[in-house]
Amino acid sequence: MTDQSVKPGERDPEDAAPGDQAISAGDFAGGVRSYVTGLGLALLLTAASFVVVNTHLVWAPAVPMALVVLAVAQMGVHLVFFLHITTGPDNTNNVLALAFGVLVVLLVIFGSVWILGHLNHAMMPVGEMMQHMR
Image 1 (cartoon, one colour):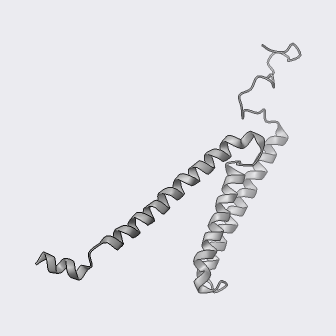
Image 2: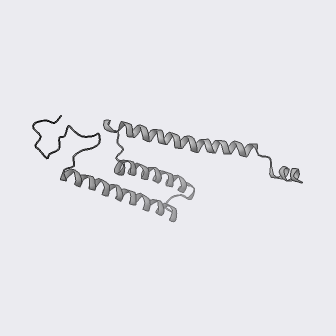
Image 3: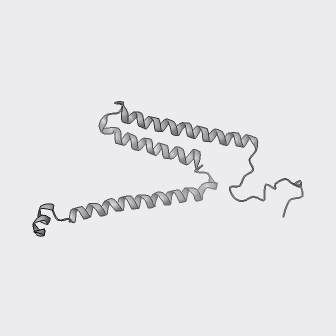
């Protein structure tokens, strides 16, 4: 049912799907500004990772940890500026889906490392295996 105050040809703001919002000229410019800011930050973090690897600004044994920190920051930039994952009340499902996805990925990674570690421990040493093959 439409409201009588809505003129013909105009969109009723009450009649919209979740996440489907009318975009005015100011909203469009704000959206583009958000994407450009995200792109700038992503490029800056990418350049920083190349600088960390190719210079001596970071102590050599700490380079892998610096790259992990820059990668996590890069993921944060992508989540906020491009995927628009925020902690707002309308993004609860998105945050829960992201958390579940992270849980599954961590379970697969750590489960694989655990299984491979135990397989390596249970393997026969190469010298003994060669003796049994003769």
